[in-house]
Image (tube, rainbow, N blue to C red; front, side, top):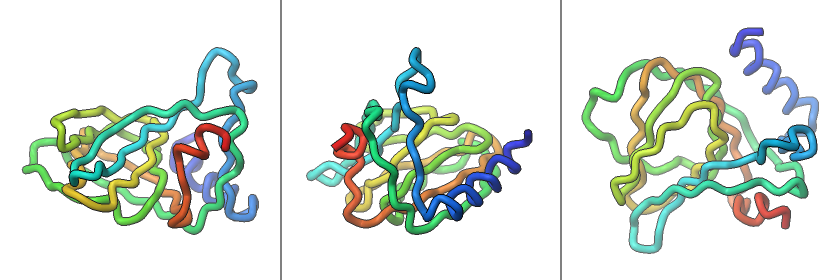
Length: 152
């Protein structure tokens, strides 16, 4: 199955699932914990990254909208600091990218589940490491990824 087919199926599944995304239960793959990479703003205007383990008790998430984007390029261009436009999950369907945070941390992102919530401050830099296809799952403004991942 090609990734574009998988992306189309993801959109269709969201429509048929009443706009909810489901986290895979840890019992489906007992040897691997589900994770989400969180990119967030700090009170001093910086940005940081942390990895959260998703509890098997995490509930379905109300998805308000889904978008898909295609980027082509490399990390050779000048840094472009920007904020996430809204709270959203990002999933790379194809390709890899690098995210740079204000503390100098650089994180390579492949097929990771990423949650973007650095809506204020300086933001982050995203460098495509080749062609990328992303799916963005928009969530309600009051969604709390830390509480969700903890199963609260």
